[in-house]
Image (cartoon, rainbow, N blue to C red; front, top):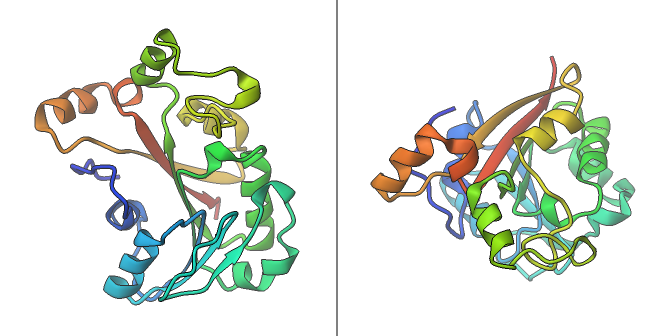
Length: 205
């Protein structure tokens, strides 16, 4: 994994490409929770990816299909063919909003063991989250963490404990600030100072 000067921005295409470990050119990409689709648009325009979006609140996109899908129902039968033909699945600031992220990941790999899942999420192990808690910004569990729609504390440790490492391989990445003085500190203590983290998940070959 490369430590890039990566910033949180509407399009996460650069983060996905840098950390995928293989070329994304021409690949089939599905994003859950794509919103207005900036990342998919970049992947299609710059890398000739075949892209598709599924969202709880789908937005009509002028460059690809965007359909309704509720991840919490854990029923992928209606899009099974799409997933079988897919190479990469993106969850960019999505898994912290669902009830059972572990079951979702397992279900996707059961349908297609060859896909690569790329996720990015707020890092609940960071000092920023402790600061938010001290200042009263973390609501009670019944209404979510950090904001009212976050249902899970996600961190590297959560993934390592939740997913069987004999079945899945996980490569973690940090989302660094572009401000060099902040970036320098983040590189020393990434797990505590990076407010976001990500993971590239595959099945063990």
